Length: 400
Image (cartoon, rainbow, N blue to C red; front, side, top):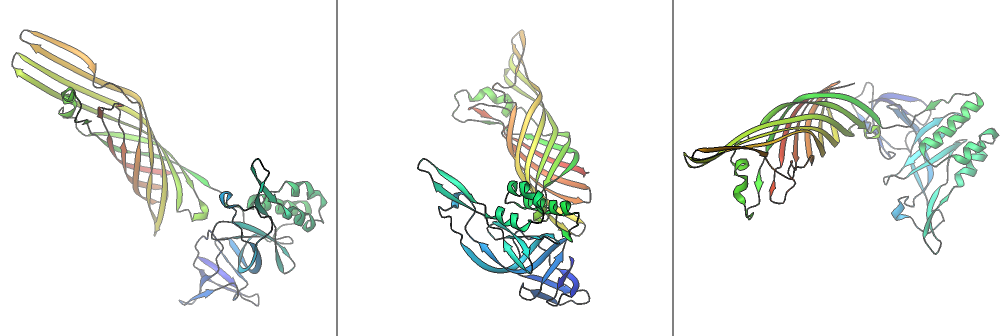
């Protein structure tokens, strides 16, 4: 992506930087000049910093507290475990008062303020204290005192400093409030990235197959012959709905959560006959009409190819049957007597359907096309018979 590196003498070289939307601060970047095809690798020892994709990084040698911050890995030791690293600090706020961050490969994020030409660690550590009855998580909040001294030229900020948490968003808010109090503007401000939502609509076709499985050692196996041999065929129907995608920006917009809310249905008719002779027979006519409201919750990955995004989804499916026809008509004849009975096609009806769903699609600007496979546990809640459903969707979408 377009960017520039800052040479040790302060001059800038414009060109392209291999931008990786880093989850942890990089210790090396690759740069190619505007009029060159040669790719150079730069470390923090070789340049003063760089800028790419509205992110500004500053070369620095800083102290890092390396104790794990994960709750299940906290130690009972309050002492700091300091190491010195040379890295590219990410600039959050730059100006008269500067705020910078460093995140290691384990995801622990630490923050620094600029003091003249050096970068001072804002000290914070969580550790466990045994009280005899239970373990308590204690926080070393030395950073509160550091910030009080750092902003001593604006005493009105003291209440805000005392409420500041050791998070990027909370510290960013505090530093920006300094500029508001002093009537200044920062030279640079990298706003904290937030998960953003994308709304869309969907419409297409669904093919539904119903599989009938009866337990082999079931004592009344022939009871369900009208379902097993009734010729219930694949149903093709219209589907439509809406989607809400939650996109994780720090992952380059490639990963997200895809939530779909769909209307779908299937209609199946079957018939089965049992003949003893022309005067003694039974005919079974099955009518299954199910209308569902579906919710698909899926993890999504997108891969850009030119102007297109190819994406894959995988997740769970939850369905609620809102309209049901579960009918069985039995016409029986015994010599001169013919009877008609209206029954349920099956008992132990389940109106909630659970399953999993997989999808593969392509996206072009606001438009998308997707093939989706869904396997559900069906509509019968019985130990003797089950009816898993298989649905294949073809959906067209538009994202606002």
